[in-house]
Length: 323
Ligand SMILES: [Zn+2]
Ligand SMILES: [Zn+2]
Image (cartoon, rainbow, N blue to C red; front, side, top):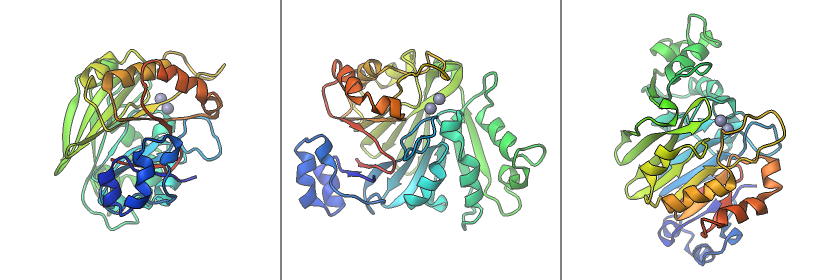
């Protein structure tokens, strides 16, 4: 299902859907589904959840991915997990308009379809370089630049035939990797100006032994935060954003299963509520959802509500959130 959400009357007016927006503005929860479309609006600012899923292969849920839309153009791709390549196409994403790719971390459910998107990029007219911003290295996790080399490098890369992306040769777009120092969640936030009025703060988070980032994305006076995968030991992240009141907080939601998943990697729903209480977002969206979490979503909502009383939305693939 594709759902389209609008947060403000201004955004409704921008999208030319003011009549439909009165229900959304009345504060109804699930009632904020105001139209069904695979496309975000052709003007204004919106974040589209391309993939609302996580590592388990489940129908209808691609791996984690987001697309930031500004005035109808796809400007930022954030994560590109397994299956999100297809969602990028379904959303109408265009490699040619991207100003950067952001990677929260290099788990396959967040970066598994990167090679596919880059391969597709070779079929577009794009010539300008493309920044790829992600975390630094740790044992068994390459830094973002090393990851691209291991994937695409002419000398030993898994897809060495795409090696032109590393040096900008062979009609390929030059990738400009930047590895942010994470210090396992204790590193300093790094502010990056990507385009006029489009700024990103890459903020280290704690995700077990995995170098990982969350992102604060600002366009004008609008602001959204993506937690990435993070545990409650992400105290530097929480401190950096405390009281920042983003328009929307996208939180990665996980319920641990019996096996196949190390502990201590993610916030519990109650801890997501604590984070939301600290940041005070206008709206909280749960994504990175597995069926075992969706089956117990009422428990998660109740746990979150202990600390955060405002609206909580559970994302689906291709849901579009206007800011
Ligand atoms: Zn994940
Ligand atoms: Zn992860």
